[in-house]
Image 1 (cartoon, rainbow, N blue to C red):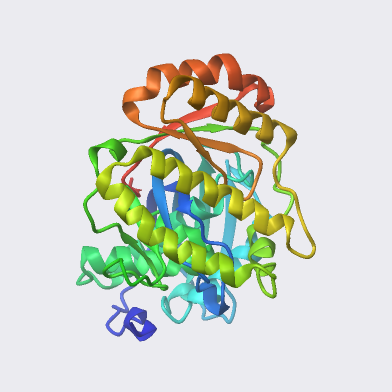
Image 2 (cartoon, helix red, strand yellow):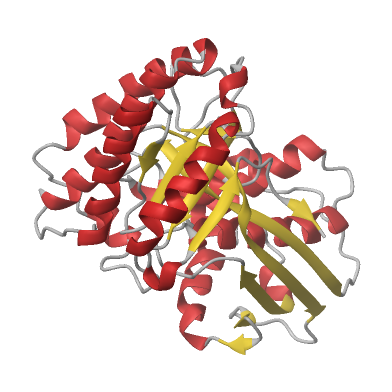
Length: 360
């Protein structure tokens, strides 16, 4: 699909001012994206659960500028505190998307954002944050071009969000989203995320995700740096092939409802992501001792009880515990009695599958 599709040709020149607000969730990849080409194109395909409670709420206030300028004009506030250190990232984002939103330099923007979870701690705050901002900007485009369809609105928002943070393109819809062109996923694209188009077994409906906050601090290495380490990585090509195969496998698993196969694939994907970081140059260990304690306790508990508890990890120390809704009572009790001790200040977040972003 040519990217020219996303360059608008019929925007109104009317003067507009106003405010728009969106909430957009984080997501947790089951098959992990790790490594990217130029222009935020993924080296491999990924599929994610969209979350529900872990989200970013962004309000964008925009007013027409009196004079033309060569520069973008915006301020960023996180939890009502001005954050000049966020502004270089937004400038980079605006520079990448200006050809698709040619009105960006015509406005003064105030970006007010808040998260329902700790920032920069491995719960994909960039995914929820960039997708929420992309949606706010698309709301301005819709005001200038009311003819844009809902489907095109979401697809372009996902396309734009990807240029801010790759995984952000998976946060707009739910409950499962695929990013990356794959022969077995109809409509899949490297340019944007697509809602998973196939049958999903009841076992995976309303799946639960309890996030154990092992370390709420800044990540040891940013995702951008981590992705860059895949260039020249001795195991990179094998990893990209593995992800391609796992997309095919998980399609069968999601249809059949095979929870044991789901557990094996998802945990392997999580550990592979961390193995790639441990074998890069320079190398990083993103897990903490308590991460490993939690994983071992999950394995023991699953063996003892036969319950379908599993874990996955993002590029950090926190642990996402995944389990079917009908096993919630016993697994929450296990978390409270056995695992909370390994969380920073005993903190964890009970979340579940969600269905994407909402305009507020």
